[in-house]
Length: 494
Image 1 (cartoon, rainbow, N blue to C red):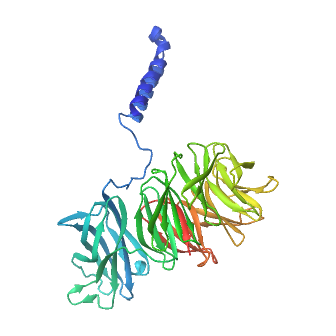
Image 2 (cartoon, one colour):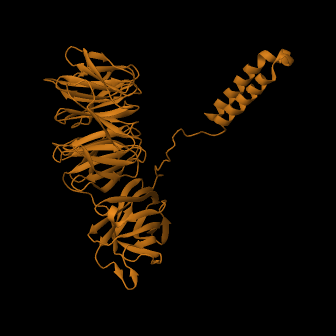
Image 3 (tube, helix red, strand yellow):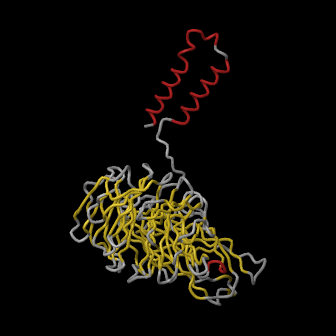
């Protein structure tokens, strides 16, 4: 704690002073001043209260609260050049108006048409929300240059009341209906409507987990817009989708369970307990969807869970603080498990969890990829991807990529690597030992997922709180989806 650190600072200061107490006069004044300066600095750093090391404010809600994400979008078309600011957003719960903690958001008809903007996100008490209000400020219309429009207060009913349940997340939407009749003699007359979220049915979804707000966002891949959100008890780990059985799995590190959802309607089906785990986080599914594999860095364990019975089928101690886990089949089912602390990658039998071989990896071995009898290992601390011949264990190459590679994805023989501290994707062809190109992507690209049906790559940008959508044919960004938190894991259901 901070008090213990403060005591340590004083103790260090006493040690520093001790050799000079017998002959203070012989100590140069500069040294004495330096010691006092060092003590003051240490005490200021330690303080008398805990200090958060994260620069990002937490939006985790208290028990009984709902985290609401408010989105703005347009319907219809028009040619009028209109811009304004949306400010002072409030929601009516019962008889009380509660402000949404968000600053003014600039709206420009040309820029927002066909896109979705996040107006704000904040916690609200449980209850029934019936209305929303906000102010339109700085209204400007290109057809009326120099005209000063009066600020407008907009108050809207939701199409149906929205229930805020305790300890949950939800989405609210304001739609701007674009028409050719927004300008009248009385001034600027826009048409808005408000609605709550509805859970989508079927596929064409990207699931995006934001671990800093314990929220799972559902994004429609046909329109690249957020359609709903779910709140889960955190802290949260990875997510995975079983496309064949239409199942979604979410690891809850805090509750030490795997949440199971029907991905057809996002309804919770089961909670699979992980009683012997302490810090479960990373997850991989077997090809047939029968088993899940979870790593627990706190106990050095890899767990094999029977998803039908909900029981732990096997467990094994692997390396030191195992992290990423990857299921693959090279004729027989195997797991690759990375251990950044030990700088090793272990190959296990997916049936028995026995370690069959291990590869030496570089600094901070992290993300794993198996393709065409080669094992690719992202080395975050070495800015490289190590390539191994899977059968012989011989290292074939070390491909230089960007700063802190976080995830990898193979598409049509191309290896995409997200560089989380460089704002780029590195791309190289499997079998080649050099990066072919780098594609600028936001601020902190991390987790990757692909839609084979739509030929799109989905990139979680942790620093920008967005999900970038890249067309795989032209390798160009097609859309950027704003999120209420920092995305940590992505999965796609076609």
